[in-house]
Amino acid sequence: MVSVVAVAQRAGVSPATVSRVLGGRVPVTPETRARVLEAIDQLGYRPNEVARTLRAGRGRSVALVIGDVEQGINAALAKNVQRELERQGLDLLLFDLGHREDRLRHILERAPSLGLRGLLLSSPHVMDMQALAPAIQAATERGIDILSVSQDLSEHGIPSIVHDDAGGGTAAVTHLVNQLRTPVAFVGRIATSAVGRARFEGYRDALLAHGQPVDPSLVWDISEGFRADAGYRAASDALDRGLRFRSILAASDELALGCMAAATDRGLSIPGDIAFVGFGGLGIGAFARPAMSTVVLDVEAVARTVRAFFEAGPGRAGPVRRHLIPTKLVQRQSA
Image (cartoon, rainbow, N blue to C red; front, side, top):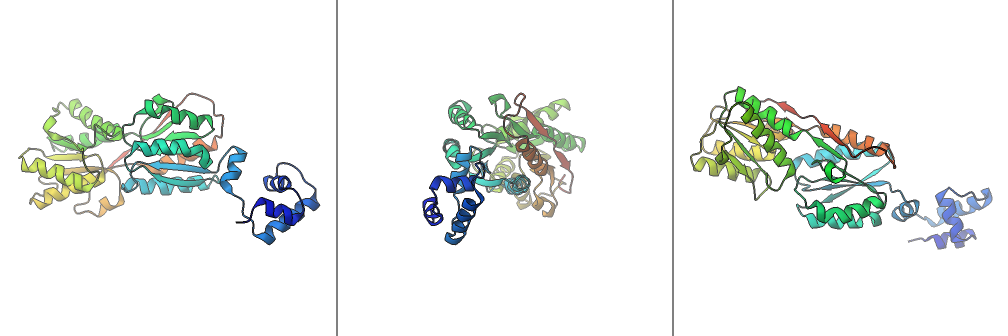
């Protein structure tokens, strides 16, 4: 790898002069600048971007830290965030936590050495914010903007762009109640997921608002598995135990697809015997048969809000804020 020292020797100048030419902030004579640029071209020198951003004190990369990269909604989020950041001249780095909080702490601790401009946290999991606080504070003191794009962390001093998950759950259950699809069951991660908990709270509030009881036997808190397989097991167990319900609100489209498969495998009709509503708005839901009703999450709106956050630049004034993105219930054949 060609070094600054090699460029300086070829141009007959000091390494400091080469750095001044590369930085462009300290003037050098046109003749010296021309010699340095010619040496760079001859040697094929490429500056170390991380080192340059560390010296400048402001990076060009934003890290998107995802709880589980395999979950369908995260692919759409990454695609849209990358597009919006590119419009501002910023790059996107992707990190997968794999449902592990220790990985998040490790990334926060490494953030300054990576020369990051910011870090977007997209993890639904309930986290030990007290334990993470020192690493978060150290990163922010080094000028790294930290933003949550999944759960509301504004009470911990982290600006948050979040979907109205509770409102989406309420809209879905209200629709099911109005369609006389009661009792309504709920499946999702509640104890360990802040996002899943918000969707459950919307489910609970809607039932109570319509005079419906919240039956604990119809609330299935997923403790193992994260996608369709977990939904299949939860619905299969409920059906095998003879539980009575007319509809299911699932906290993700993937869980809903698993539940629908369990019902179909037992010869039940959808929506005749059981109606289903998912959460997320994954494109594959429209091609299930019957097509799946779902609460759509607007990841494009999240990405645009992320870009606006970084466009504001450093030193933004005002209190920590929560930006709420509306959800939308899309009715299809399953409900």
